[in-house]
Length: 68
Image 1 (tube, rainbow, N blue to C red):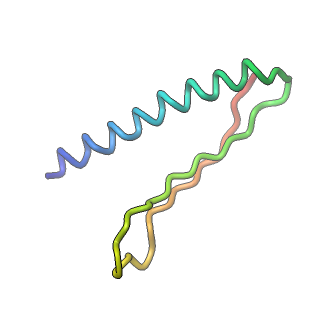
Image 2 (cartoon, helix red, strand yellow):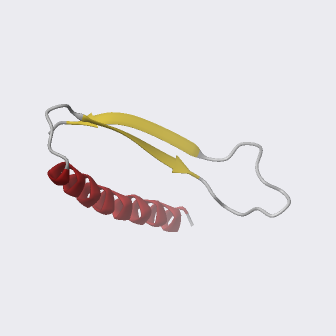
């Protein structure tokens, strides 16, 4: 069970990483400048739990800069 969970997580993050890399690269090429690009990445759970949601949903927020 845990093996499948890890595979799902890795697949999701790899897909995000590939798409985000391309989007950021395209954006930087279309928006030249000297200052670093400051980004915020938010991972947020959006599961529909009907009438019994968890007390706290999963949320991870990361900020960083990309040099031009």
